[in-house]
Length: 549
Image (cartoon, rainbow, N blue to C red; front, top):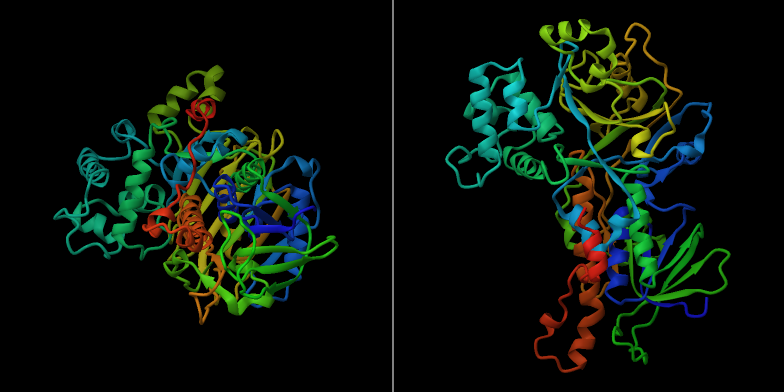
């Protein structure tokens, strides 16, 4: 490499780091992006089935006491066509309105990947049946399982939740009330309807989720309906956010970013703090760092290092500085038990048709298959939610979510589907993830077309995803090491938006650090004004037009 001097070196190619790298590169800074893994995406990576098996073997033998992934197990056999899968370690759906979708459009990264609408959402109740989640007023009025009185109450609530409710009398004094209790006491909704709203519309993760944040999520989701179709959520191709992280890396590379993958970082050494003689417009007197890589011809130098909490090099743990975003993260003791299963039989995440509908289907044998498809069978992208206490051997306090991806999302070969199951649990639990999630997996498999002979998974892996640990710094003012927070326990659709907000926070901090002394040296009276930088520069006219999907 001819020039190993950079303004910023970012370690780890997770989604937050990749968005930050793209934004800094587009802003004109010289960025190097490193990852010891041979693939992009970090903890959110999209892997082939073959790579997933290797990842599971690596993490199953990890002895780190605070590792991000623990208790990893997998099937012994790997199915055929293993390279045709794209499996995300931390799956998510994408709201059609929010910081993440705005970043995709504003950065031009949306042209590097594809999306499809989430086709169906349903909730599993304690009787073993499914309830479809209403996505519009029409869905509410067409639903034969809801009484007329309940429909009126539900419509009143949905109208309330879509508006400016913060200063309303209904919410006064109830912001921190459990959301389920709020729905039943303030809007007189039944326990069953409240459960559907809380866990399948607002994506609450526990019985204790507070009312105000649940309402704010629900409002954003409701406003997302209709932007790209009837569903408020999109599913990314090729595994979702892992592939999108690679898209942001590509955008950074197009703007001059340098990428080095698969090289172990041997050392990170602080440089002295003497002023640099470099006349670059981005030059500051930041102390800087020298990074040495394994099997790499020369060291790299930079003014600022950015990394996730899991990628802080031991040489500089005491120098790390939590960003403003990190200070807002509740480092609780909750982990997520996760399962990834490959199946070769279609699953239906739609409610069983009512008696009248079933008779209509049976009256016309030729239309049976099309009717099944219309009612949700053979769906390619769908979400199923298990509220607390919906399974005899399931959790009584947390909701489990199941995301289905198939061939249409370009994540699996034809005739195969990927099931992602996630359930929040206490980090202190000693129960294995497989023991925790097996009841949910078994319940999902009974939803196959042939319920009497449910399919057996071709491959499974179970693991625990643990919350990130913050690293404290005694001297945050002089630090030039920015720590990117991880998005810990959150609703299924929220992780991409949270990561985007974290990326913008880190981006603005890096820009201020790199430009502050340069602006002062140039005699700029309004120093703070000169430090402001748009997250994304305007796209060229031809690219801007192509982003209007």
